Image 1 (cartoon, rainbow, N blue to C red):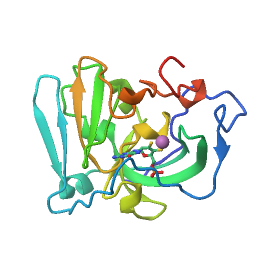
Image 2: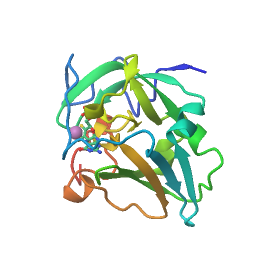
Image 3: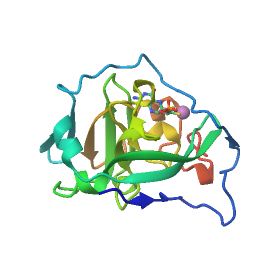
Length: 198
Ligand SMILES: Nc1nc2c(c(=O)[nH]1)N[C@H]1C(S)=C(S)[C@@H](COP(=O)(O)O)O[C@H]1N2
Ligand SMILES: [Mo]
């Protein structure tokens, strides 16, 4: 399919390209809290579990057979680097969640390797988030989250879980990995929500 999206910019003030406290980079830094998991495509699967406990599964083939989009988006890391106009390809969460019971307010994103991050369910919907499998015209490199990662660019990049494995829908906002270590539960770069209480 392939539509072009400029992505979603939280509360971006007119005429501003960088959120407060951020600086521009041209390279693409790698930030991983642990070793890079290697996930063979034959065993890869992505699951969504509803708040009622119903589990939906997609194999790699299932994911690749869905219509994909090509968002071009700015990335903002809480360690203060930003990278503008990055080009991705992947499946919108709107597509993946189309037939899923969305009676839940929050989501916990799980990665191969054990990383987790939480966010409101509405931040995954309405063209704001994708499961991406290509970056800048190539398959997504393992160090940047390949075979597939979540991309939710309107929040700090720690919310964009690499090596994504599944999403658990939940009634409450439980903290993920960095959130339980003092990072902000929401993480809007335009409001500089780096740490709890910001
Ligand atoms: N599974 C997993 N996802 C993760 C991380 C991680 O350690 N493990 N780090 C997060 C953080 S803090 C950032 S800034 C981005 C970095 O993505 P990059 O390495 O592609 O730049 O991935 C996020 N997603
Ligand atoms: Mo980060």
